[in-house]
Image (cartoon, rainbow, N blue to C red; front, side, top):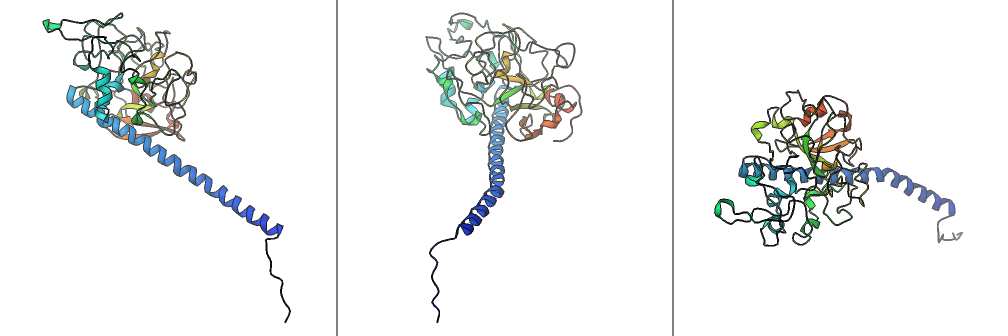
Length: 343
């Protein structure tokens, strides 16, 4: 019988064929893996918004209105995400920031959590107010302050972080980021028409003109809030909170423009007279289309659109193709009477 020599290795051609097959399989599997990863991240983002939706409803139950967006005309005021911390399992952090102390290093809290007088919001050093002779401390830091805690505002809160977002989870100066901002409305009633308003903070359009849900006061002495009863367009037709991603000034994280979204509120270092309120709230207006990259626009790193929390607590993925249509600004207004098709 002829003895066959036993092979001890692949030939070069066989090895190349195996490598080619592996490369083809990787090429086929990689997009699928990326789709699964994005689906998971989008689901986590949606869950974050649902938690905020539950928090908003609980806040409304307790206070008979939604939180004030920002309670003064200074762009670096404390913002709405601070006030819902107890409802997203962040009570300890909330207490650190809001509990009165003699040094005044605590967040100013508007009476009744907003919706009326600002009770003499100060612009200088903290004060002690003898309200009704009770000697209660009612004034704290009017603006976001890293002395609170100290550095409590640097905390990264998972509920406020979207895993798909490319914005860093902290600003360069340490403030904890948020990847979600509130809806101030569209601009139809703010000026001469759509996109007419050019100043959203620092004495710009007053909160009683804004037709969204989370409102900027833009006054020293009054705060503005929204109740469910004010949403005459229907809670299932009106957006409350949406995603925010990189835009012109957000990318400049080493500057102090205020566009970088910070959960504690505005962190703008004063006023530039145009759009620095964008760290807390933005507008749903065709002048600032979804995923258009403008400083006051909503947007995300999800493919084809962004997640929005509606006022009924539901979360919907809104397609970028909505840009330029009447539907997008209709989602932004609470009382415009516009017809909004189901998402």
